[in-house]
Image 1 (cartoon, rainbow, N blue to C red):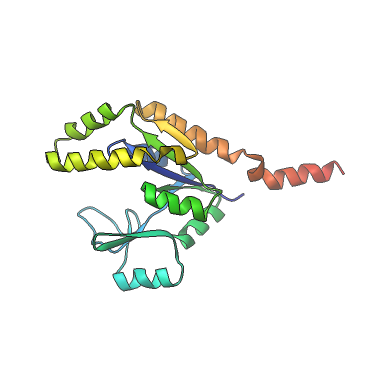
Image 2: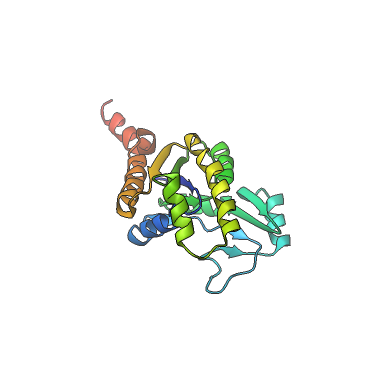
Length: 202
């Protein structure tokens, strides 16, 4: 049985990365797609684990070969999701998470309408603002910019199949896992089993 693809997006500061990391640590049959990028590795980042680090000519060659499900240029660097990597993982029967922004999610929904899309929302905008300010790592003008972006991202939430509110990490993680497990039991995903059962009744 082929694995399913799950698009997970969220507003900045909602805890999406933490939730996805917790799922991956506990469930080996769930994997994250590792994006390609042309930016240089940061301290502690490993090629193939955090990103596939490639040169701009390599990335643009992949664009020319239609090698990306979705890609974008952010400032001076490219970021993209490899179609080949996705196909390899789903053929192995594992479910694949694409942790991407709402713009990338829109591209993937159009290219892969069978993918399930999940938006992670904060319990309220006030809580989100409190979380961003509580980090103590960003200047006020950076926080203001992130809040504007977050508002725009939250406005895209109705376009997603599922909405998970991250008011508690354990509850939100359980909700994500329930969505992933439910998708596995759709009748369309059990085509081979259904075919065998129907063959026996003839």
